[in-house]
Length: 186
Image (tube, rainbow, N blue to C red; front, top):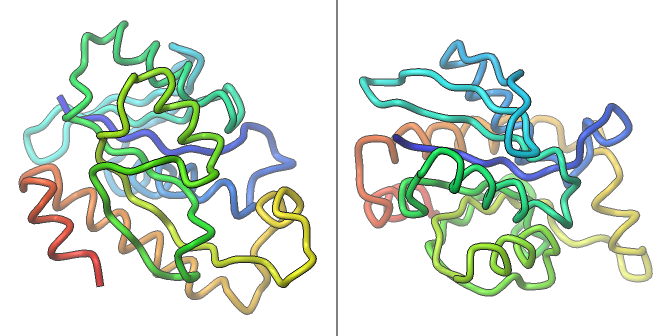
């Protein structure tokens, strides 16, 4: 079984915000694969399906970003899933808008959702797709920035970044993560 957790905040107020690119990727994968992510389980919305002969679970934690680890931990325990079979997708301030960075380990780098995951998983080693949202202008509050919507001028970059992330995750279903990183980190 493979699982993909997209990090974000629940509710319409957060829908199109920078902090919710993880949810946007899950929504696009659900659309591509014909999976409904509507089952409420493990403090998350979950959707199960079969993709290329592989059982896949899509996860949108409903704990709010800063407590994402609670939901992913509950999922792993409930489904008896392996950490190495998953991918976590989230926003990254240190990556330029439109770019992806695939990594298999690292610190939280100030990202509270990842801090929560590291705390609940007891490791910094898990596959991740970091979605670039760039840094705000100097003087702008980081929290306000990540909770704001993408401007129209970035919608095209956002759409192609979501597509690229979905392509990378699809590729990962059949290939090792190292190979996926080599192909999609550019």
